Image 1 (cartoon, rainbow, N blue to C red):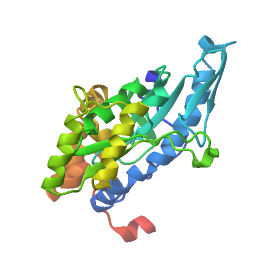
Image 2 (cartoon, helix red, strand yellow):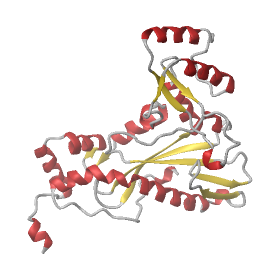
Image 3 (cartoon, rainbow, N blue to C red):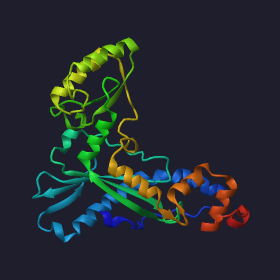
Image 4 (cartoon, rainbow, N blue to C red):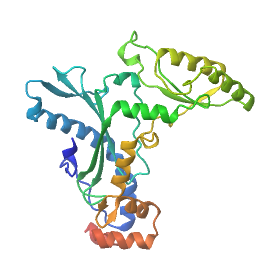
Length: 292
């Protein structure tokens, strides 16, 4: 998987913009290709892994759609290993992908999260190219997320409960985050309730016993659902943070990715036009001549 760094996917090509204004507009929308590229990466990952002699006779890698994780190994290895694949366009403002699966799904730490940063070959045009790859334990991501968010009584992370008896399309596997919405007086009472849980009562646990305590607190005081819960850019996972720093510092066409992002989205117009002309020969052209 790590060998995909630097790989170019020859499956689509973004045309070179005809002017600096067109380049700025393109930079703002090219990130929308991430879902498409993510699916292409999943397909290619399965083919790539199945070509490796290491797995001969042990089983086969398969893509799950829908399902978690994206790619699993069906064969003689137990528990079934897999990859959850996330594509990131680093000129965007943040890593928008979410990771919401419960810690309970990673009891054997059998699933890895694979993050792939990508950009077009020429920064905003050309074929998609993998800039860098990050692979971390799924359990470590789920634990970092829960430890970061869970701050009772101010913020609760609640498991969905046992839904195995439901049909597959109604089964729930993702915890959710809830923010306290009561008064100061209610918060003081909630603090007393949490303190009664004893030492370690504020540390998150996905167990049924601890979740029962949280649900009693949730039932007694007002909370609201946090729609930003589980964004990977906000869970403060050490490996992901190192990956972000490394990618944003990567030099592409004379500038770091972070510097290009600042120039494209917040830079002075004159400086941007100069950079586009110097590095990509993008300059103002006569539209009528281009259409002839």
